[in-house]
Image (cartoon, rainbow, N blue to C red; front, side, top):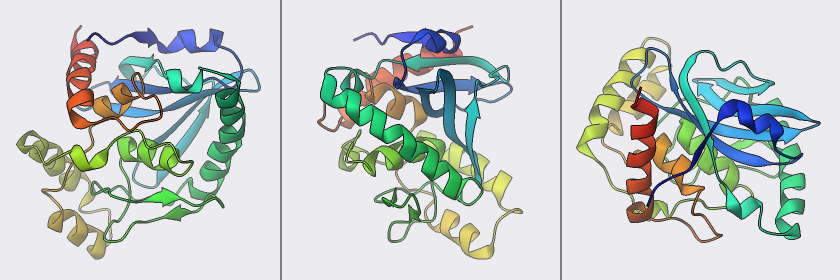
Length: 228
């Protein structure tokens, strides 16, 4: 099954209240980054957990720091009037979450149940410490009853050890001891990869997407992003 992707700049031509997931390869990085884009008041907004304590909502964003950045289909939000009203309601929630959490979300890999409350405040799950760019996307949609992934079907993969080591090396001198201890004790936890979270939106129909559905689409998407 092939996956359709679209240039980031084409999003400006889509209608008001459109919501999509975006994926990009930052320059000089071997990892991928994901977030949400939406159309509000005629402008593109790029909403993403950029890094530790940096939740960003960029309006008419400059994406020149990416080698490639694309958006994907999200048919769940486009199928009928009911979802149009859902989109219209969820965008103010995105804005609220950003206002309340712009500089306070720790970067951490373990993810099970973290979400945002109706008030917009972050509700850290038991035994968890924060979010990644990918689990931020999962968490904010989950907060509105949209469970993109069947997370119980994911498992630890040895290839993610390098990702953990990179994150730990960058963060270890910038975080509190309890955060460092959390990272170390969960170094073998399940990782939800940006390409799999992003790709899940293309086949999500209200039923959570399983690993066996998302993983091959993620492989295709990663290949597109790393193909010069």
